[in-house]
Amino acid sequence: MALDSIKGSLREKGVRLTRQRQILLELIDKSGLHLDAERLYQMAKEQDPKLNRVTVYRTLKMLKEGGLVDELDLMHHAGDQHYYETRMKQEHAHVICLRCGKVEEFFGEPLQRLRRQIESHFGFQILLARTEVGGYCAHCQTLRARELEQARQMGQVAPRPHPDGGVAPRVRAKHSA
Ligand SMILES: [Zn+2]
Ligand SMILES: [Zn+2]
Image (cartoon, rainbow, N blue to C red; front, side):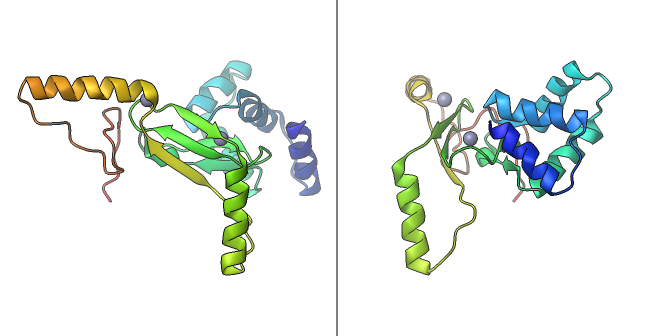
């Protein structure tokens, strides 16, 4: 249903929904996940082996510029890649575990309330809002407590904190900034 409205809005913009674009849109829409470009490319290739990386990246850019797909960085918990989801989804906050990279979605009234408060406070018209929260999931809190305890027992220095406030041992590529 969300996909149909995307297709409609593409038609209005005079954008032809090629088979390759359709494959990507459907992957993003149906997965309900936040997939990065490389993952999307791998999945799309299973459906159409002729698809190449350049086309996938170009299509994602087109979908993003057309306001159909949202590009997220999810606090760069795993490096520099971006993640994609359809803009048709109800507004939600992303809750990211900086240790294991698990992403949860929070839908709830407080987000709408925040939006209304910002609009009235600044006399601002919000077109797009993105809320990201980073921290440790319940599982990682347990593991982390154990690790810190072990490090203490061995007289080691505690793991270096992540610039965002956590410890991110999975980080592959870090921002130099
Ligand atoms: Zn976690
Ligand atoms: Zn999401």
